[in-house]
Image 1 (tube, rainbow, N blue to C red):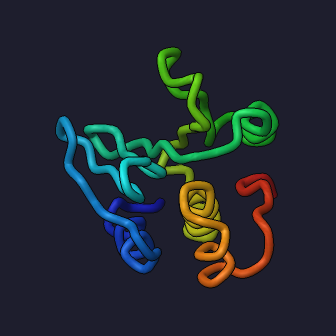
Image 2: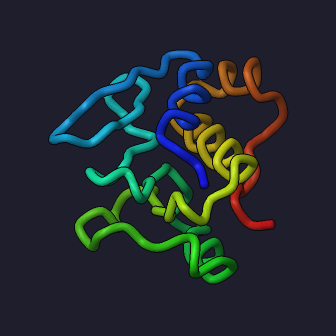
Length: 121
């Protein structure tokens, strides 16, 4: 099981990331763009993910991943259950969500290479 503290430790290493508490929810963002957010009870995590690939991610592991609430479907966003997420998956998902919101040169400096669809094993 992944904890908020583990995600926080990773997010703090990603350039331009700031942490915010908004409506009792922990969110990590770059500028005004949120790339990771937790539910109030810290049992689920939402993260940036390409809309066109999220159905495949959810179909591959439906016990782990799920769609956000209907009002958030317009965003590049997917959610997961923290109790079912392992550390390697979390690292990949958080880093790729961060990659989506920073300039390409910065992502290449920190992570190298080009983005790839995260999450599916």
